[in-house]
Length: 266
Image 1 (cartoon, rainbow, N blue to C red):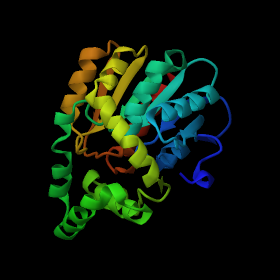
Image 2 (cartoon, helix red, strand yellow):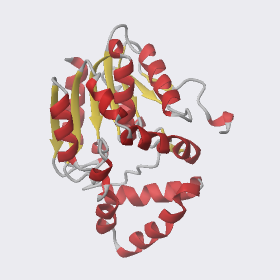
Image 3 (cartoon, rainbow, N blue to C red):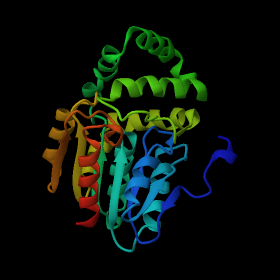
């Protein structure tokens, strides 16, 4: 890993203290992905955008802990998107004294069998040229460089978005780190396979909110069922006409931020 690319601190601060929320990006290795969310939330309150660059799951949990330590005294809201949702679960389970609300956005399924149709759903939504290019990129994905990662992300964003805002570039703020992905994702899959994610759910001591788009290729029902069966203080918000990233969606963006702001202040 190139030390020059690792943030000196695993976060960016928006507005001034108190910082009432910590945002954890997906990937692994999609640093900066949540900058648009942090910028919007910081119009009202201090916000911390995590920049998670460790090359292990445990290292990333420690980086999230550092972000939580920088937040306001007492407990704060922890928001995780995609892989960041899993990482936030693991972090909140390890540090229950630091989190009052856990928001899981676009959460991947907790069982491997529930993930089997995600890529085929994406492929089915693409026009032939994008589908062919994605099929060509996928076999070499594990060895792909930064340019290939950016290209793949742009194609997947087309499949993951219901009705995006005009001119919005999902890659604009993101510094994709293939090295981090290759180091961490196999460990993340092992956490799922070995039941460690489910164990972490059982250890949570906070309210949990699932925010999910009805157009997200990650299955809502399977994730909702597991969370509902294991979390006492739980509710789901299903956003209509919304894909994997609610903040880019024309129909869902306003409700997404209204829900988040309400959870931060209450």
